[in-house]
Length: 29
Image (cartoon, rainbow, N blue to C red):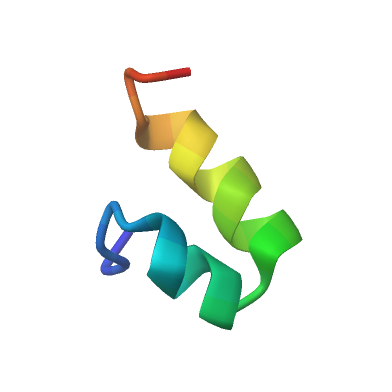
């Protein structure tokens, strides 16, 4: 998505939704 791969930004926004989306397109998970 248009969101950056930063844990801080995810914390500011919906930690649940952001974390889930990040894990979806993040190869780190």
